[in-house]
Amino acid sequence: MKIVILDGYTLNPGDLDWSPLSALGEFTVYDRTPPELTSERAVGADILLTNKTPLPRSAIESLPDLKFIGVLATGYNVVDIAAAKERGIPVANVPGYGTTAVAQHVFALLLELTQRTGLHSDSVRAGEWTRSPDWCYWRTPLVELAGLTMGIVGYGAIGQAVARIALAFGMKVIAATRTPRDAVDGVTFTQMDDLFRRADVVSLHCPLTPETQGMVNAVRLATMKPTAFLINTGRGPLVVEQDLAEALRNARIAGAAVDVLATEPPPADNPLLTAPHCLITPHIAWAPRASRQRLMDAVVENVRAFLAGAPVNVVN
Image (cartoon, rainbow, N blue to C red; front, side, top):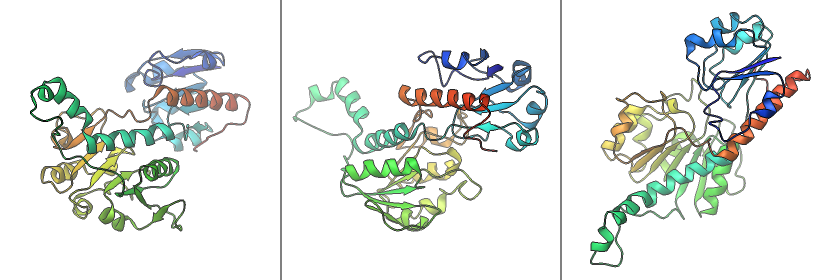
């Protein structure tokens, strides 16, 4: 079997081992593949693996040998799964590998919003503490998490992991989910609009669907507390970025932190790049080495299962 990876660099920039995958067939890995080279590089491949390189219908139809598509991620919108299904090609993703890492990143962002550790460390290194007449100082208000309300939008595995950490910090936790449910493990469920009104921190963990796209817009932001924070480690298009930027500029909310944007990498004119009180990280919540190793291991198992005639994690 010929195995081709179109864009392996993000998963494995050199600190992981490809050998368990390369042992399964004739193996080629490209760091990155521009769309115009996809068909050329994938020619003759039985198994094609992609992370963010698109596989539209035209690419799939140009590869007569293709038998299996593996996505090196949970999201699989880069693949035309209907076109693959018409060809009888299973498409498999990797769910769940980044739960711990993403939940950890939520609180890395939240703690930076509330404590501003980076700002204060830079201040000390710039000599401000040395010159201070007092034994301590702070450059921004410091916010204690205990007693605040964490609002979690989407209560899948990551939302549940965030809830557990929030409870450990002494926060109250409310959640909104598509499936109504009773309170469980200290978490109270409520409707979306009520969550945005009540929460001191709103953290987004719902899937991107036609119903959720743009759900965080000017109308919803206007219902939030002026002291509230918004965190998005889910999907960029959940947020109307211009509306969020304006809310931050007008102090409609206290701050925001996002790990995802509607377009990645962002264009230079993305309004959040210049918005005040906005932290942006480059889609790294999923990326600790341990998390990427779990992803690698799952990709190998997906390929092995396909070769054994019993594919798993099939999305089409």
